[in-house]
Image 1: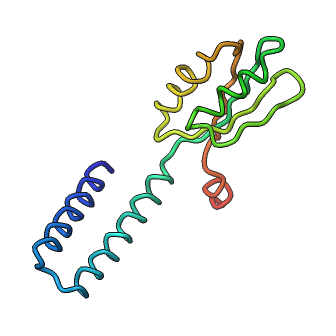
Image 2: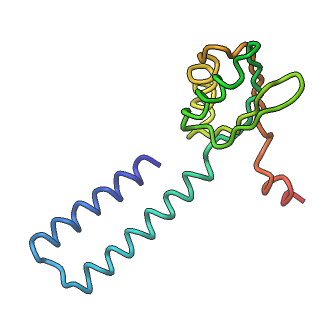
Length: 135
């Protein structure tokens, strides 16, 4: 994927330079801009499909649920966050670029928050689309 991103950025640089030097007609420039947008959109779609997603159940120290909640809202990889009743105090939906980074987020950004006393990480066995289409 990194090679593809670099190719898109290189092409953008060439198009920008060609525009600055008036080497492209307005029509050609518009067509190249449209092609680059399609390339970027497809790249992002493939990247999103490869992202690691899961849930973290979080136990907090007594009277620390609100402080932990506020700190978790600052973690960019947390997409959704909800309070719970029962054994765990919070559940967070988390997304990272790959599985190894997913673990780093849990350890470095969630468990390190003062007031977090326990976590349980839940990872789906597969994408539900793949699960239900497997036949």
